[in-house]
Length: 346
Image 1 (spheres, rainbow, N blue to C red):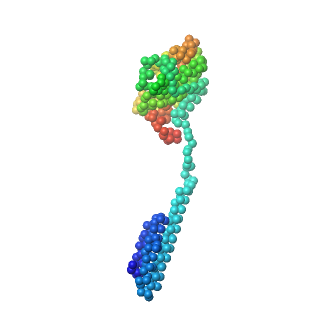
Image 2 (image 1 turned 60 degrees about the vertical axis):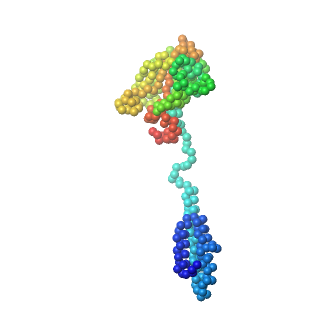
Image 3 (image 1 turned 120 degrees about the vertical axis):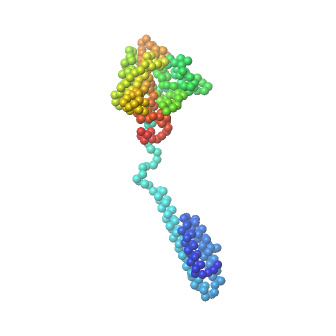
C-alpha cells in the first residue's frame, strides 16, 4: 500500500461517502471493520509504516492516526444519529394521538331489520296483541295441512320449500304455524303477532331465501273485515309516521276467506312521479296480505268456527325496512355491511 498524503485523503473521502449510505447499526459495524478492523484499510496503513524512510515515519504516522481518530469520531457520531432516529421512530409508534378517535371495538347496535321488527311489534303491543314465537323447523301439519293447504298446493313443491333430507321436516315457509300452535295452546279469544325468520327457495334483488315475517291473528266473536281494515290502516300510518292512502284488493290465500291484499300510496312520490323507482310509476306499493281466518284453520286450531271467527295478516319485515330506508336491493340487508349499523348506507 502506497503511503502518501493524497492516499490518506482519498481513503477519508471514500469512507465519508460510504458512511452516508450506512442506514443502520449493522451497516455501520461492517464499515468499522472494513476500515479499522485487524485487516482494515487504516490498520494496514499503520502496519506499512516500517517500509518508509525513518525520517518520514513520524509525519506519516501522525497523519494515519489522525485519519483513524477522525474515522472513529465520525462512526461514533453516526452511531448516535442512528440510535436517535430509531428511538424517535419507536416513540412515534408508541405515541398516543389524543386527536384520534379511540381504538377498539365500537358499541354494537341493532340491524335495520331488527329495529323495524321491534317498531312493528311495539305498534301491535299498543293494540293489545301479544308476541308468540315458534320453531323454524316445522312439520307438514303445522306448516301446510292445518293452514288449509292441500297436498297438491304449489307451496309444497320442492322448488318452493326447503325440505330436510331424510325426514318429513322442513324449514317453515311462513310464521303462520305459530298461529296454529297458539290456538291449540291458548284457545280463544286470542290476539297475537308472530315475528321470525322464514325460508323459501327464492333469491333476487327483491327476494331472499331467508327473510323475516310478522304475522298477526285475532280470534274473537263478531269480528268483521272492517275491524281488520281499521287495524291495518292504523298500523301502516304508525309505521311510516303519517297518514297514507290505502286500498284493498281481493286476493286468494288458502287460510283466509275472504282474502285481501293491501296497497298504500308510494311513500316516495305519493303517485305523482311516473318515473319513480320505488312504485315503478304506479303510485301504489303492496305491503301485506290478509283476510278472515278460514273455518278449516280454526278447526285445526281446536276452535269452533260456529262461535268464533277472526282475521289474520302477514307482511315481510325486510320489505318494510327497504321502504323505510330507501333501498332497492333486498340483498343489501344481508351483506354484513357495518354501514347499516352506523347510518352510512342511507
